[in-house]
Length: 92
Image (cartoon, rainbow, N blue to C red; front, side):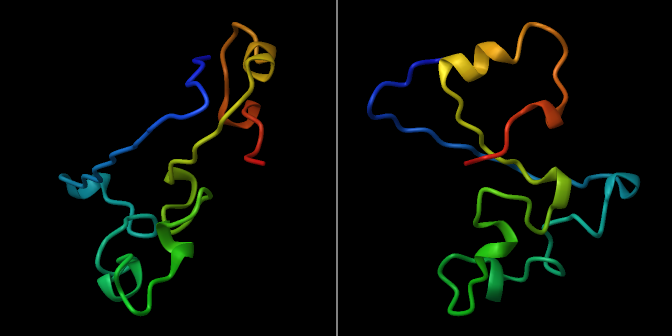
């Protein structure tokens, strides 16, 4: 747990790489078929935030990164054992 203080700047940079054919998951890949510029680009007139613009699984399904903020108490309650993604509380 880190106390970021009352004001903080945080960012996440993610680069999707499908460099090998066997790594490509077409149903989850944020490519020109699932995320065409006309709907996936924030500046597009037909922008669809459900694709990638929300803090919930979008076009990438279970591979879509989701941010969770926990209080110190919530974080410590997770314990020191192995964690599974299902152990993390849902975003409120």
